[in-house]
View 1 (cartoon, helix red, strand yellow):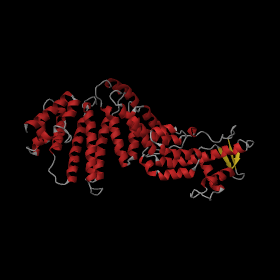
View 2 (view 1 turned 120 degrees about the vertical axis):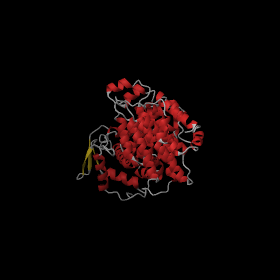
View 3 (view 1 turned 180 degrees about the vertical axis):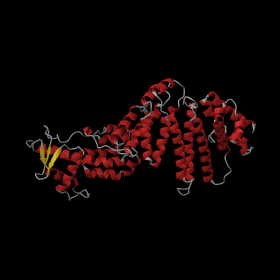
View 4 (view 1 turned 45 degrees about the vertical axis):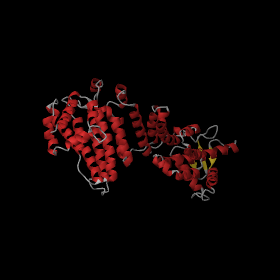
Length: 470
């Protein structure tokens, strides 16, 4: 083994012996961008592959104990093979080779990272920065290999197989990092410089992005539940080790959890997490893009709980696209709502808000149309009873709303159609009343203004949505 390779192996083993996370990260060349990658590759080109096998590397190790010797030698062997590379002509084969070798490095790193002592305490928690660096680098390399692959889906070198392998090796690392601890163990260990659980949110964010790109919503939902059921709870972990976990990482985690709840139509929980992300986002110019991304999703969920953004806010964040939708919502203009949703479908879908607005929004627009109709009815006839109204007023307003719109309801509105919508609103709790079909009346809770049958949308508890996988 050449002197340079031997020096490298000895140096890395010393990093493990001294638990030096900074030296470990800066010394390991994972890609050609590392300054040591080129010289080490040149040195490796002069030796045969047997010289960087696990057995050969073991003979060069110093400092470390016998308990980690085999795993460390396997890890260093994988690192050296990754740097050495292969002589491949095809671009896609070269990209797959880069991915495959780096995946092996990550797999061997997981073995070291998961090692514990007799008390069950992880002995290589100082690898935290390296583990995150590996995950980010692997995602980058695998994306390149997947983009170049043209093989069938079931082929082990296909784009899907590459992405699956990437996800699985990072998920394995997440399992190691997601270590439950008793109250006494936590209190004893929380003052240590490194704990494997410190990177659970950063690994989670990497996985959230992978799941989002591949629309793996079940996995995203499961990951959300994992983070929300940490032992001890994440709020206690932040209180003890908050200075170690960057606020940006926490904010991104909240954002991803809010986003997946949005996709799964659980808008109350989505609002909860998005509000938490908004509360800690930087208020300066540097945080403008982050605030805008959060706000787009918050506007969607807030519409569903009856909270509308101020026009100045829309102007500030260049979100005037929402104005026609909000106008349709407030006025009960169902044709405009549908038209806006259709014209801007792609914009909404790319931001994961189209489905929830489509599924949950229109029923609220109908509710607002009927409320505005009833309000006008009482303004025109102040002596009318404030606990009931004739159903013809709703038929008339729906007819006028759709007239000339070209929608299926245009000129085709019958009492039975309106009865169906009213029944649905009552069933959802958006109208509190009883329909009398024989008397063609809506009987409601009495109120001085006659609107007692239309509770505030924010007070209406929506039907429970079961998250996929629960």
